[in-house]
Image 1 (tube, rainbow, N blue to C red):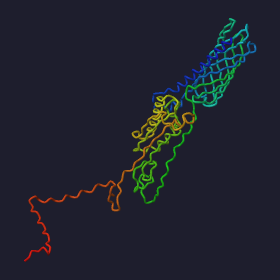
Image 2: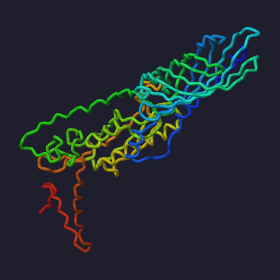
Image 3: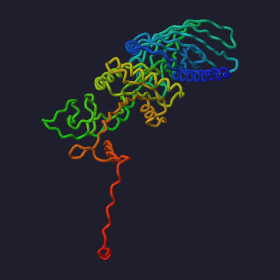
Image 4: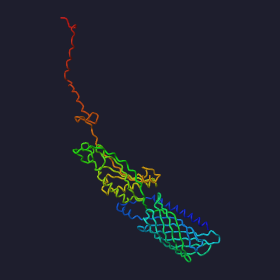
Length: 424
């Protein structure tokens, strides 16, 4: 019955599309529950791997069977028991057709449970061994010899490392299957297909481009010049005394503003919990900035463009606050340390490539700079220069007004010319 085979493969394709869609939807969901640092560490170390998958199969049937081969599809769900041990539940359908009128065709539907031992805990390329049992129902057409039967299988296989955005894996396997249908049969099943992870998998982060280092300030130091805050600028010319230890300064001793991308600070997939490696990096960061008690600092969380704007905004905010809580636990003053998420709005690389998206998934630490107190220029005698902010000189006192009853001063007589003198 060729139409049955076509319908079976059409159903398999629809099942594959639905599984990929469900996995993509699961990645877009975000957890709104916040956990403290200790519970996050426990969660990271005890994460249980799980996955679903779909394979197509070729059957090399027992020599006493007719037909001698067949095809099938197999859907399965797997979950880690502990370490390298997993269990898998499978549902499968076999088609054994002769494509000849008058000959018997067989359609077998089965379910089983396998115990799987996988190297590398399925973190990368992983060979595996399996052993399992199950039951099947054989539908015989046009005969009426339909029966339930027991089967057992053993096999080996290989799964690839995670590939692509969603961590898909390729899977290939070979199984020996004993089926006690009628007098018993010894078959071989060869399968190939894909696995889709339902839990976080290891990703290899691309190191973000480090920001250019601030140009060091060349300062002439002498043994006789005091430098109370140890910033390299003598107290006599230090406009910002008390600069925190380790903070880069400019030529007058004031701390420079900085933007530090926390390279290597990563998170579990679809979560805001820090990985153990991220905690080690943040411990070193905390040692450097915990002395900046009076300097405002802000953490900014950023994501790539995969997912909705609202999802990325929430996830970036959760991750920025997760870093803030950890730094405060390490002694960084919380009253000067704020956190906010900016989602996907500030990319530093192309979101169209895997490498670019990895650069955009980051947390930045913004450290505010210091400002020197304004000063008033003075001349050689220490007096403020005119127009340089010095106080205006006092107005001169007004001339005194003569009393109203005072006699008017006598007018000075004009000189008389010699030729105008009166005759004697």
